[in-house]
Image 1 (tube, helix red, strand yellow):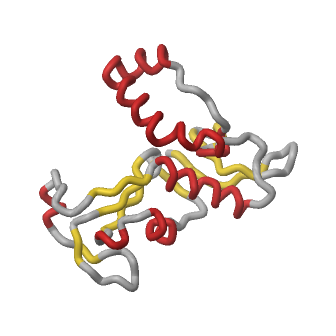
Image 2 (tube, rainbow, N blue to C red):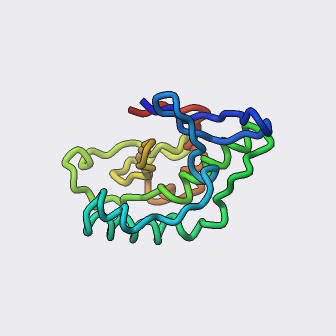
Length: 159
């Protein structure tokens, strides 16, 4: 079980968004600081094809935000939550348009998650990684701005 939450540093009293697994706590997202992936380690863990795909994804979705990674913590818990929120939106947010369904259950149209909308759609917005969120989104709301409003959390638990 993983717990994602804001924790305060004992020494500096600053805040990080963190991931806790089996009692071990580490900063998560941008709060974890920048580290280049180790190509040799990736190849051993994922195989050559998996390492190549990881590198493509890393270069496309994480490397462009290199300057946002930091290790100095935040003044407030709210800043730490906002930092992880931005990390999820910047690096893990993807959209699947209508008619691009590979899964049979996507043939069912669902109401767009934006309250004021009401349009039915098979399109989705999703954040998938260590944490996962999925929203039915119509074409007009398949964008970062709409998802930023829908993405709300303080603490997350994953298995």
